Image (cartoon, rainbow, N blue to C red; front, side, top):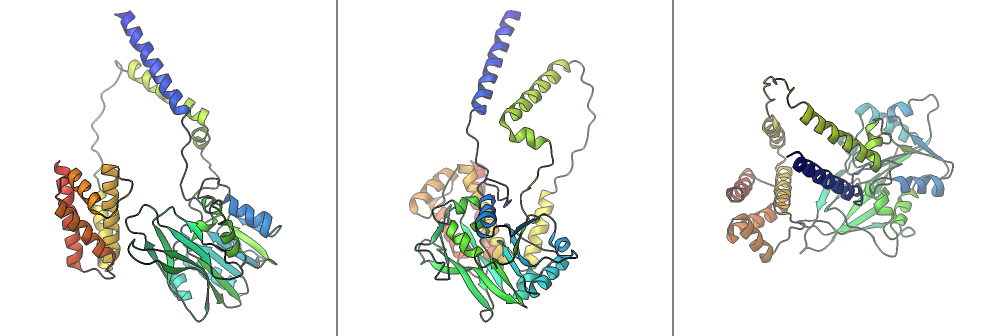
Length: 406
């Protein structure tokens, strides 16, 4: 009996070792996190953009700022020049925004590349933004271009990774200059539309430059074909006779990792040594503590507040009358549900796709076509009524109930 158990243990150890070896030699996955950190080499880091600005365009004039803008601008010797903010979302505190605007009005330049801006800034500048979606496609083809003829490339600067882009919906046309545009198609059967993505506006004695396409400063975008010329074109609006202050405070990612576990988990050899120690400790606990385990007291689990939280958020949207936003969230959640449930890479419109989805989900072809036609109708509607929202919810719930019943 002992000999037989030893054979099983040896087989288990060999199998476990083989699995570890295969996992160790597996190619490292690409990190698509949108960090915008100046030292990150991942696709959505900004290492190349910072090197381009620091070493090529503004030699000896770039200052890296790692403290909040309010603290930086409150120094005794107030810095003068261009203050640059690049992130997927840049949102200032009210006092901080007022400090930045006051500093800009004194003859400085404020540059912000972000997919969203706070309401106070938009109201002050008389602008508004919107998001243009690419329909059901996985990726939307975007053709970015600079307006200035001397900076304009022979061909558009292409970007095709996500299915949405933020653009300016409203601007002060009298006092605002257009710097860059994007050409996209909202639906596959419609003509391409051209929208603004970068503007410049005089503010007091200074000026404010805004871009809704911060991905233009990421490693992934710049390394694609000649896209670096687009980034350089936006940067060319900075005053090259003054300092450029690169913000490192408002970033989605961390520039410095203070946790010692990051060293273990980011180094392949140490990571697998750490995993082996954990597994060994677990095996020791299971076999050594099997006869020594004490009675575990009963602890009442925490109540799941997910539904209550979801209801609160939905009530906030509903009370504000943002039914269009509710519909967009509900449609995106339903499409992600289908993708994860049936491992669908691309959801398209067409009888062939509808037949396959109907067969796999247990719904009829007519029900499937009705649901997706209604979704397309609401996506193209500028205003959504309560009845339309209720009808969409009923159609989706009925469709999902047939899936869950299988």
